[in-house]
Amino acid sequence: MPIGKYAATWAAGVARRAGNHAGLKRANVLVFPCGTELGLELHNALQYCTHARLIGASSIACDHGRYLYRNYFGCFPFCDEPGFIDFVNDFIRQHKIDYVIPAHDGVIYHLGGQQQRLKAKYVGSPPRTCIVCRNKRLTYETFRDRLRIPAFRDLNDPRVPMPVFMKPEVGEGSRGCFLARTREEALFYAERNPGLLALEYLPGEEITVDCFTNRHGELLFVGGRRRIRIVNGVAVATQPVSDPEFERMARMIQSRLELRGAWFFQLKRAEDDSLALLEIAPRIAGSMGLHRNLGVNFAQLSLYDAMGIDVSIFKNDYPIRMDRALSNRFDLKLDYRHVYIDLDDTLIVERQVNPLAIAFLHQCRNRGIELVLITRHNGELNRKLRRYRIETLFDRIILLDKMALKSDSIEEPDAIFIDDSFAERREVGLRRNISTFSPDMIESLMDWRR
Image (cartoon, rainbow, N blue to C red; front, side, top):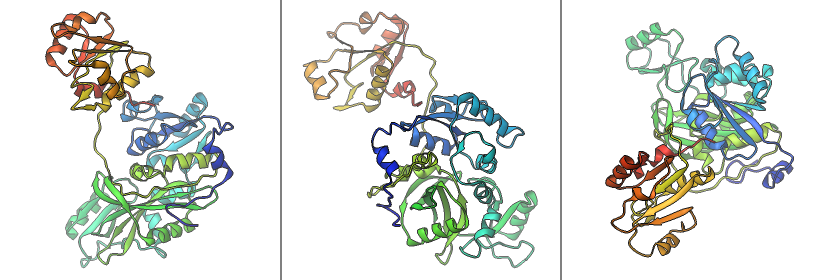
């Protein structure tokens, strides 16, 4: 079966999915923990899926998941605590959960490794695979005769080649990893943590290969991405890269491990340019958003496959690069039923519509909040609104003369006012005692939860 742009098995289930798929109910899908990079990618990937109602949970009382998951629960014990699976099963029964998607390597080990105890369908690979992939030593022992793996270094040998890369047998990201440039430094780290593996240092580029295997054991997708910039073990800058070796290695891994749904493996180039296996993970990766924006939605593919639907893949072919950074989300305790917004330099800025302002106004329309345009626009107002295709957006339009105060037109106590002018905001805020916002503050009014 070809892997790549036209990898497809056009089955009856896929054909039905192209229509209304009337026989498929909307499933309750639990993502745990939902505030990790994996959980955030799962939200991005599934928030518009018509067959999934997302429910996010976390062991932290307030993590970033609460700003994205409309159904959020910050009450879970940590996955390694006694009674964790019993707690999850009680939650499954109480909230009628149909599917559970793990979003952390530790959860994959504790839930995926004992998924037969779960009272909901686990979306992912079988237990043995979850256990093998959690432990780097066990992973290397499984594949050392078939794939290039980092060579183990004996720190008791004074002639050991340096530098040495030290990493935990069990861990994720780059936590607990050290590059020891001398044997003394390596021995220091080993004494502090006897569980560290001492491995050869691989100086080349790091590559992640994203894969998808369906429930029939068919490898439907293999796609590499170069990890250009890495922060705390997360690829924050990445772009596609291809190499025939990726598919060969993916098929070799699948011949030894039973994999299902989304999974990936990480490689690093050695000095001789060979590719060495760093790790295998039977889960979604946070940076799979790169391939998702080429048309390969791993989370949705995995969920549909768990539902028993035959899926297919069609990948777009255009240059793309993904870069990630911290983003702002706000919890604003403000109740309002009316929005007054200025036009020039607020809604229309430098002859362009302000896209964030438009998104916020449509958010208000969805919630039945009245929208009022209040402006001193000097010119043909209706013509300008038509030019920018916003003439039907507002419930009311107030056109003021140059000397009128905007506060004279605002009477409701449960209103907010948006204007680029500090003087206007100050006058309205002081006289009407309502909250006022400049264009750069609109981000705090957005609600990204779904």
